[in-house]
Image (cartoon, rainbow, N blue to C red; front, side, top):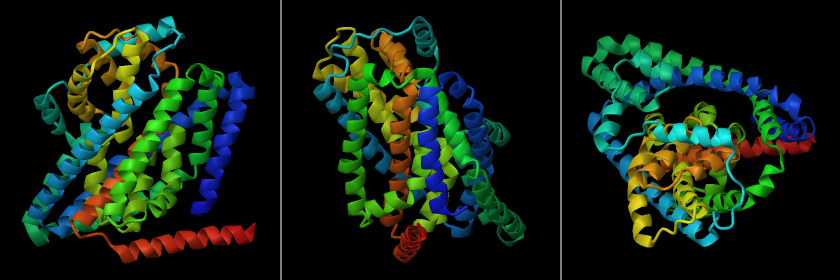
Length: 424
């Protein structure tokens, strides 16, 4: 399916989902299985795609020292950007004060669910977080979709291939074939994207109704404004420093970004985003390392949301946090937000745990549960774009970015868009 055609179909599915969800909510809720099936299809791609591409990228590079430098630069970049996301989130919450005057109380079942989330375990120490990176079994890591554990296993596997030398060439050839097959597999799965997106949007609107937007307008508006500010002040400037056109990057990312927004799932867009960034000029070994690592350590949208949600939760119960208390919470979130995985509602689990640890009532979690899908759509999209920008910055930092490949890919994308206009 042509790139422009698929994007157009996704837009149509998005609009149709809103219409059906609003006018026929009972029917729309029954469309959710389409979304679940599509997400499962995407998830079955991720493990073999990531393993094969990362091993080939590292083994083909054959330089463990270079990999170490890439890893260090990646962690430094992630720490700087996520700290900026926290600062923007806290600043926006203090400016907009989304919890002041909020008069909608959480429904009983949401309060119960919030209590369960507060009791759920999240990484609370550096030792727990580091330990969780290492898999006990690669099969288990792939079954659970734990990207970081797959990355760790792949790195050691690739380094072992380099050490073995020529006798490991058949394995590289097999993995090279697997990588090409999985990219083609991704293309086939994307045929089902419009149907999956229709199911996701229709069921969300059908379950919550458009009227929910009025009740939560302040918090929704504050979050999306803060996300836009983060994109402009941080991601745009990062691209400027890397001498990359941010506008061109957004244009080539429109398809995976739409997938992330409409499904509210980072995983849904992961295979397509990897493919796009490699075509955009980022070397395979950098894409395969930075993107999955970023899905654990560089979820900019989720980090910003957590900062804002903590202030919102304190405001609705009448607790006024001073600047010192907010800084302490920010330091805590700098650690706990690194343990976030790209799965639905995990941000709320971290939020509930953070509120409980600072003796703030978890009513805010129950309230936010009602619109979590709508908030998740925005933060997931920023997570995706942030990780794609990270691959570009690290490639530029390593002097490995292919500008000619980027220009060729942008020209090709522009030509497809022009041909589409002529056809119309």
